[in-house]
Image (cartoon, rainbow over all chains, first blue to last red; front, side, top):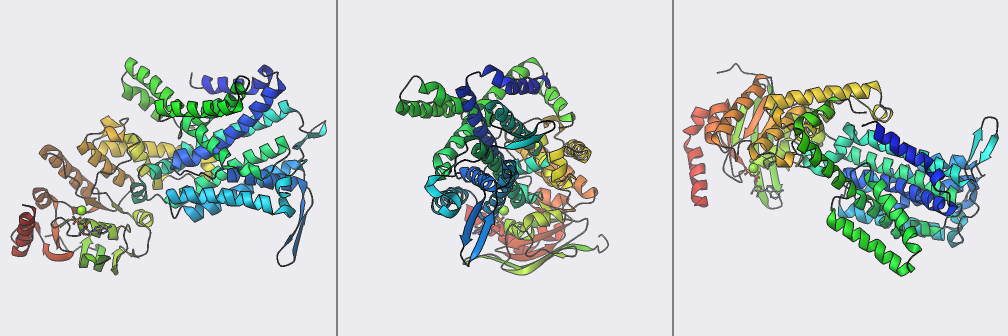
Length: 347
Length: 261
Ligand SMILES: Nc1ncnc2c1ncn2[C@@H]1O[C@H](COP(=O)(O)OP(=O)(O)O)[C@@H](O)[C@H]1O
Ligand SMILES: [Mg+2]
């Protein structure tokens, strides 16, 4: 039973293109999946360490720009007469570069702001995203500013027998996104179910107590920030090489809000939460769009969010878990059931 | 009396000022290996502040704290904890949102052997380390008598049990010296009696104990030595019998009672 469920969901995920014949729906699925990866990365910070990054889109955008520029090349003059020319690299190289650059920014932000926690962290992250947007807008030599980076090449992979294969096909790209998503999910799962995850949860629950048992909380906050930013950067790279055009609007606050809504409604601090929230709020606008005017569409979006948060303050996934736990406890004594889980080595 | 033992904790001329308020004016005392020392004094005397300074949660305005060979001034609290000097908190302090078992697993953090890569790759070292921690956690829960509460959410424990869990957490961090801040406050007589047994069991297992407590009966029963603090100053020090009859100590406590009335 326990093994069957993940396999079932994996099957659903990897057969999705078969069900989704409509290229438009496939497109929406890909965009939604990319945002789900970003939401999962946000959840690592928000759900497990309790730090609200309201500028999370910065890491997404940095990953996108770093990846796009790696594959497009650039030619800039820095103050002091420094002239930097970067010849275009294969597009696939942009992916690790996006991850690393975003991860480094996460490290910086983590080091900078975790000294001043809470509200300061929120402010620092918001400002960081806004600064990034202004940089993208004004550093025209590098980013083309409002003219956007165009013609971002698709990822290309080398396949034995075929040679160089450029991923233009939506179906193939869907599988790339799905693979990255599954990888991120597994990384987060391993992290949060280990002593690293316990340290993160501990500092969220009771920081002084965590410190008193020898946990170096700063270390784990920075680790969470780096991992989270790197995954958001991976999502950004996917986005850039999928839509093939990015402009400074990628840093808009509304995207962070979308990620936060996905995490909160689905259930922060749960592995499946961002996915459930992401599916709902990724597809909702599209489903609703065919029936109502755009203004009404956003109102429905907001209303649904409020209803979910009001009815299920901890989110959808914890509510479902609680429901099944209650049913299970009605059947058998609770301690036996849960201790059986404890004895099994965690994977 | 016990033979003179090796000093492991020494607090020398420590002062702590909060702006104009002097919480500790000049405090000097030491604890030897294997002792149970009680730090007593009226409310606001500076006992918790002393704990905070010793464990690095507060910076001393002046003076020095040494544990074994290390000078603790300037060390971060988690570093001091890793030296084996572990404290509990006066207010009940557990990881509310976690189960009892999970609480102790968190407390065992520094005993884990797995590195980041082990965790990400799910190596055998990761699995072995986790299994060791699970066994250690169950052992500690049995030791403090909470094994029947393993899956209970910490927030749902009875008050006395939460205090026990606080001690279990501290024990998980493998202390060579344990600092307990009013551990039996709010416990009934039966619970207190059981707690005294636990404290003695911890000491017999080789852990030195520094105890802040208001329950005088308990203090007199468990401690080898008592240090009395009043208005941030040590006013008496000695065996429990001596302290009970010390006129200055009696005056300090009478004054306190008058103020409260
Ligand atoms: N963080 C702090 N800031 C300002 N004053 C404090 C702080 N902590 C304690 N104090 C003051 O220091 C004095 C000693 O407090 P405390 O050490 O908690 O006493 P005790 O634990 O002996 O009851 C009290 O007057 C208290 O108000
Ligand atoms: Mg106190």
